[in-house]
Length: 336
Image (cartoon, rainbow, N blue to C red; front, side, top):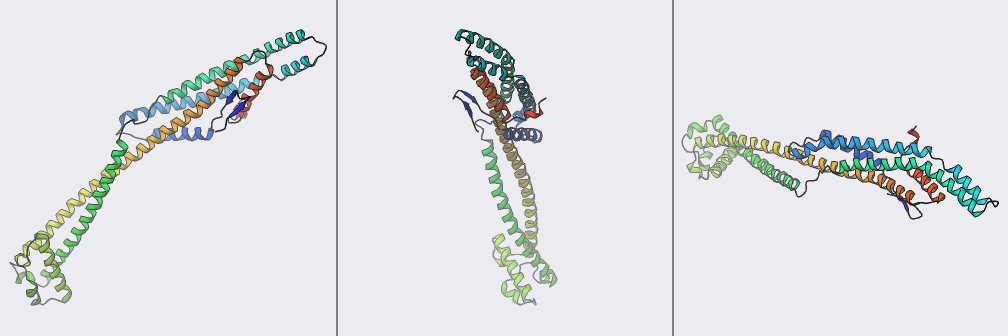
């Protein structure tokens, strides 16, 4: 941000209109969009902030317009020219010149008195309404909510990955057992081995094509591992019950996964809203900071003007400098 100086005394710092406009738009959009149901204290601040911003923004532009109008009514050039003529007039004594210049300075002061009043009132109004915004605290001081929510998201992500992996294993086992049962039924193997499931040697005696034989063998082996039983102790009922149990377990995990996904989604929404809230807080600070540059510059102008005694050049220079300052960031053409 640039800073203009005059004799290293009058400091007028222009704001960034683009920054203020972007901050205003973000605040208005987010205060309307954010629900913040999980942060009722912050939720209650959204409407007051929106109202405070609209008021502050209106006061800001209205007072810039008022100062601009008043500046346009100030014309010190004729007075300055008359003073130059008096100072150059050799016919006048020093005392006469001093008296004439004092009269001109009185005219000059009268002309800028309304300007200083408007500038003072404008600085006060902009400062007060900016402070109204600044007083609305949107920071979660000492709050670990953001960290906690992120930890929850990470935990849910790991849990979802674990569920997906387990469900994948169950699906593979269930399909294998289901295919084994269908093969038993297709070739009437269950009728032959009603009690105990066949061993590998017994299976070779059954008229099964090689692919089906390999499938049934794999199914029985897998069933033994799932039940932690030796093949000779397995029954056809074990095969059916384990297949059905796997289906039930898969459905239970599927529901758990669905719930976990919903919780993760809800937590992600909270994280997004916290990010949005932080953005609103930052935008508020930016707007207030830019507005401060204006009212602080007005106060600097007033301080310099009130310090002048009979120095016409200083007063005129300060007024012209204020005109240039406002034109650097405010569209004075739209002010009638």
